[in-house]
Length: 153
Image (cartoon, rainbow, N blue to C red):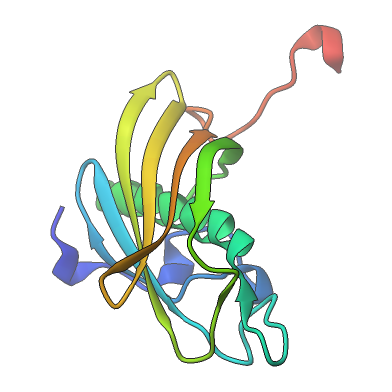
Protein backbone atom coordinates (compact mmCIF):
# COMPACT_ATOMS: atom_id res chain seq x y z
CA UNK A 1 0.00 0.00 0.00
CA UNK A 2 1.33 3.42 -0.89
CA UNK A 3 1.45 5.97 1.94
CA UNK A 4 1.25 9.05 -0.29
CA UNK A 5 -2.42 8.60 -1.15
CA UNK A 6 -3.88 7.93 2.30
CA UNK A 7 -7.32 9.44 2.92
CA UNK A 8 -8.28 11.69 5.82
CA UNK A 9 -8.33 9.89 9.17
CA UNK A 10 -12.11 10.25 9.60
CA UNK A 11 -12.53 8.14 6.43
CA UNK A 12 -10.49 5.31 7.96
CA UNK A 13 -11.95 4.83 11.44
CA UNK A 14 -15.47 4.72 12.82
CA UNK A 15 -14.68 7.06 15.72
CA UNK A 16 -15.80 10.66 15.32
CA UNK A 17 -15.94 13.95 17.16
CA UNK A 18 -14.01 14.08 20.41
CA UNK A 19 -13.52 10.31 20.40
CA UNK A 20 -11.36 10.42 17.27
CA UNK A 21 -8.04 10.86 19.05
CA UNK A 22 -5.44 10.59 16.28
CA UNK A 23 -4.87 13.34 13.72
CA UNK A 24 -3.64 11.48 10.65
CA UNK A 25 -2.36 8.21 9.24
CA UNK A 26 1.03 8.95 7.67
CA UNK A 27 2.17 5.49 6.60
CA UNK A 28 0.57 2.11 5.96
CA UNK A 29 1.63 -1.22 4.49
CA UNK A 30 0.29 -4.76 4.67
CA UNK A 31 1.64 -5.25 8.21
CA UNK A 32 2.64 -1.80 9.51
CA UNK A 33 1.17 1.65 10.09
CA UNK A 34 2.20 4.99 11.55
CA UNK A 35 -0.18 7.67 12.78
CA UNK A 36 0.38 11.04 14.42
CA UNK A 37 -1.32 13.20 16.99
CA UNK A 38 -0.18 16.60 18.23
CA UNK A 39 -1.09 17.35 21.84
CA UNK A 40 -3.00 20.60 22.40
CA UNK A 41 -5.42 22.08 24.91
CA UNK A 42 -8.16 20.80 22.61
CA UNK A 43 -6.96 17.19 22.84
CA UNK A 44 -9.52 14.84 24.36
CA UNK A 45 -8.45 13.95 27.93
CA UNK A 46 -6.12 17.00 28.14
CA UNK A 47 -5.48 18.12 31.73
CA UNK A 48 -4.54 21.76 32.27
CA UNK A 49 -0.90 22.13 33.31
CA UNK A 50 -0.12 18.44 32.68
CA UNK A 51 -1.15 17.27 29.21
CA UNK A 52 -2.75 13.99 28.18
CA UNK A 53 -2.15 11.07 30.58
CA UNK A 54 0.22 8.48 29.13
CA UNK A 55 -2.34 5.71 29.67
CA UNK A 56 -4.38 7.28 26.84
CA UNK A 57 -1.56 5.97 24.65
CA UNK A 58 -3.35 2.62 24.69
CA UNK A 59 -6.25 4.21 22.78
CA UNK A 60 -3.83 6.02 20.44
CA UNK A 61 -2.35 2.61 19.59
CA UNK A 62 -5.80 1.03 19.17
CA UNK A 63 -6.98 3.82 16.87
CA UNK A 64 -3.81 3.49 14.80
CA UNK A 65 -4.65 -0.20 14.37
CA UNK A 66 -8.19 0.79 13.36
CA UNK A 67 -6.78 3.29 10.83
CA UNK A 68 -4.44 0.59 9.51
CA UNK A 69 -7.42 -1.73 8.98
CA UNK A 70 -9.41 1.12 7.45
CA UNK A 71 -6.59 1.85 5.00
CA UNK A 72 -6.48 -1.80 3.90
CA UNK A 73 -10.25 -1.77 3.43
CA UNK A 74 -10.13 1.59 1.62
CA UNK A 75 -7.94 0.06 -1.12
CA UNK A 76 -10.79 -2.36 -1.92
CA UNK A 77 -13.45 0.35 -1.69
CA UNK A 78 -14.87 -1.03 1.57
CA UNK A 79 -15.78 1.30 4.45
CA UNK A 80 -14.15 1.11 7.89
CA UNK A 81 -15.59 -1.57 10.15
CA UNK A 82 -16.00 -1.98 13.87
CA UNK A 83 -13.24 -3.67 15.83
CA UNK A 84 -12.65 -4.54 19.45
CA UNK A 85 -9.65 -3.88 21.67
CA UNK A 86 -9.30 -7.14 23.58
CA UNK A 87 -6.36 -6.21 25.74
CA UNK A 88 -2.74 -5.30 26.09
CA UNK A 89 0.37 -6.87 27.48
CA UNK A 90 3.48 -5.12 28.70
CA UNK A 91 2.17 -1.54 28.43
CA UNK A 92 5.16 0.52 29.52
CA UNK A 93 5.20 4.31 29.59
CA UNK A 94 8.42 6.26 30.10
CA UNK A 95 6.43 9.40 30.99
CA UNK A 96 3.32 10.27 32.97
CA UNK A 97 1.87 12.70 30.42
CA UNK A 98 2.16 13.68 26.78
CA UNK A 99 2.65 17.44 26.97
CA UNK A 100 1.43 20.46 25.02
CA UNK A 101 2.93 20.73 21.55
CA UNK A 102 4.42 17.25 21.42
CA UNK A 103 3.77 15.31 18.22
CA UNK A 104 3.41 11.61 18.92
CA UNK A 105 4.33 9.14 16.15
CA UNK A 106 2.38 5.97 16.81
CA UNK A 107 3.83 2.83 15.19
CA UNK A 108 2.04 -0.53 15.00
CA UNK A 109 3.40 -3.75 13.51
CA UNK A 110 1.21 -6.83 13.07
CA UNK A 111 2.66 -9.96 14.65
CA UNK A 112 -0.35 -12.30 14.33
CA UNK A 113 -3.54 -12.39 12.23
CA UNK A 114 -5.99 -15.29 12.09
CA UNK A 115 -9.81 -15.59 12.03
CA UNK A 116 -10.38 -11.94 12.88
CA UNK A 117 -7.96 -12.00 15.82
CA UNK A 118 -4.76 -9.99 15.50
CA UNK A 119 -1.84 -8.91 17.63
CA UNK A 120 0.35 -5.86 17.17
CA UNK A 121 3.51 -4.52 18.72
CA UNK A 122 3.14 -0.81 19.28
CA UNK A 123 5.50 2.06 20.02
CA UNK A 124 4.75 5.74 20.61
CA UNK A 125 7.74 7.96 19.84
CA UNK A 126 8.32 11.63 20.44
CA UNK A 127 11.28 13.17 18.60
CA UNK A 128 12.54 9.66 17.85
CA UNK A 129 12.50 8.58 21.51
CA UNK A 130 10.34 5.65 22.63
CA UNK A 131 7.83 6.87 25.22
CA UNK A 132 5.37 3.95 25.21
CA UNK A 133 5.68 0.31 24.20
CA UNK A 134 2.96 -2.33 24.27
CA UNK A 135 1.55 -5.47 22.69
CA UNK A 136 -2.10 -5.06 21.64
CA UNK A 137 -4.70 -7.76 20.92
CA UNK A 138 -7.71 -6.91 18.75
CA UNK A 139 -10.68 -8.62 17.12
CA UNK A 140 -12.65 -7.65 14.01
CA UNK A 141 -15.43 -9.92 12.81
CA UNK A 142 -15.03 -10.75 9.12
CA UNK A 143 -18.33 -9.11 8.21
CA UNK A 144 -17.83 -6.22 10.62
CA UNK A 145 -20.75 -7.38 12.74
CA UNK A 146 -20.28 -8.85 16.20
CA UNK A 147 -22.81 -11.64 16.63
CA UNK A 148 -23.55 -12.93 20.13
CA UNK A 149 -23.72 -16.72 20.36
CA UNK A 150 -27.36 -17.89 20.44
CA UNK A 151 -27.11 -19.16 24.02
CA UNK A 152 -26.09 -15.63 25.19
CA UNK A 153 -28.73 -13.60 23.35
